[in-house]
Length: 340
Image 1: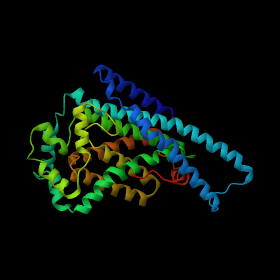
Image 2 (image 1 turned 90 degrees about the horizontal axis):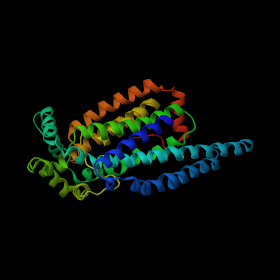
Image 3 (image 1 turned 120 degrees about the horizontal axis):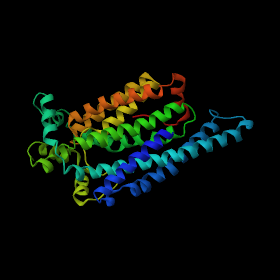
């Protein structure tokens, strides 16, 4: 896992230098991520893992011989210790990611690319903004509430919970390293590099950054009436106040939501074609939701899918894709596999 640790340390150093150059140390998010994710990764999920192993042993599906109990327990504790270091680095990475995301409007002087990206989006869709068009098709209040809950809650669970179980898995070490490097590369390339170079706020904040309230406000008002308030105002107020917290920072292009789902779908396809099918179906749901709910332009998802596919293919060639036996051990070693 040294390449992953090294990459995160280098990325963190660059983020800290960026914060120092703007005298914005108050925008660092490390404490918030340690406080929020520490109990999840170092208490709740280990308890789940140990409980599942105990339950499997109780019902006879995972019952080692007495001779192997001591050796197996020592090996299990060793894997937990190794996973603790990986998870610590992972939390550090997320803190750096959010810190830089919060800094991007400072570095770029605002959000300069919304008008251009919205126009490109409309051009590619026959002169029509896809968000309002989707709302006309998928505007049922119950459906909107379900999609919003999935986008905010289920996506986070599918994105972050498997990280712990992959960190502690026993076999297919090459897959584990490739997964964590993929996670870091996807979030850095999509959410830091490309996002900063082409910084936009998205349809939800289009009126604030362009002064044009007529283009997307009807969509946002209809969403408010049919499915209730979101935390979009919280993000904008955090931006105005110059505060930082879990998940703060605004950027639309490209979509990390879609990118993370795509990354997991590609790994699922390596394990099982059926699992891969559901993974790609989930990518489609997230991509449509991101546009329908006003978070993104459609091109944000398109670019994310293409970039993640290129990153995944490149890492697979560089590190090796493993064989089907090694890939299958992800499912065996993890009570919760790397699902999107």
